[in-house]
Image: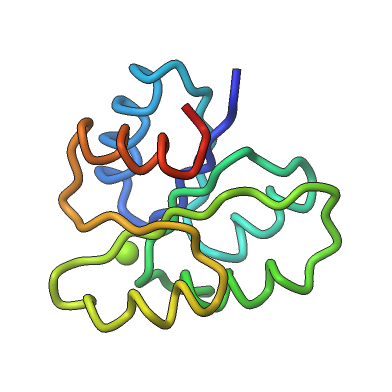
Length: 121
Ligand SMILES: [Mg+2]
């Protein structure tokens, strides 16, 4: 079973994402900010990271930058989540190493298609 790390400071978003991802037969871990996510990735790399942009302590972008210099055996795929307001972030995130992006609020169909594009399901 492949693992998805859901990184979001919103408990509601994490819960919604978990529900969708588990229905797609993925195992799910959660991180509350980029620092928490980085620590978890260094301990055991997930197959894919669903990454929020705006978070306290360490943002999605700072996480991407830190991940690129982290010592890891395998690189997770990164799907980052943005809002319509954050559409200008897409190019910056892709340049920083994100593989795909989804717009919030996301639904099952959208997540399923993005996970398929990055080869997770
Ligand atoms: Mg947030």
